[in-house]
Length: 169
Image (tube, rainbow, N blue to C red; front, side):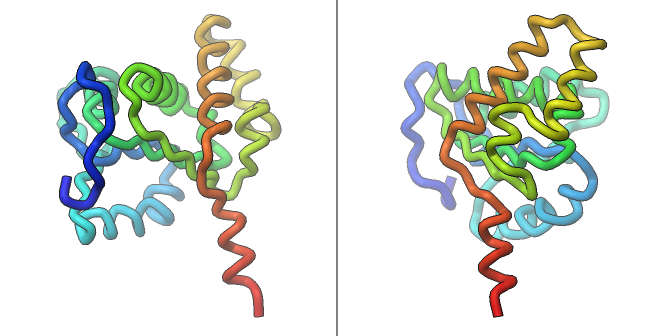
């Protein structure tokens, strides 16, 4: 991990395979914001796991959870459609578990969404979770809600703050 500081994770943490695990939703994020990050990671010698590293034929959930556990940092890119994905919400629960169990660093990025909408599940987050409640066991959806609240309570980065800087004359 040449690009990242030494890890303070507890001794019982799985061995780090990646510096950063990136959790995100949607092609717009993949080809836009994440595309820029993906180019910068190797330049800074950061070994990042993005879902394009999944091997064909692998069990997706097992591979994703293994990558999360084997990462020093989890970067969560909350976008408008993040909560519409059951996979993203399952990743989020695992990320919070690794933060609590191993001391994994978690950095939320609020990409064109307000942290309070994520924290309190408003707007698109509310709509997505109400839809999930019709399809999935309520206790599972409750875990997703708790993980959203916990992660949105972490100090993170708001893309909307940076827009203001660049839009000034």
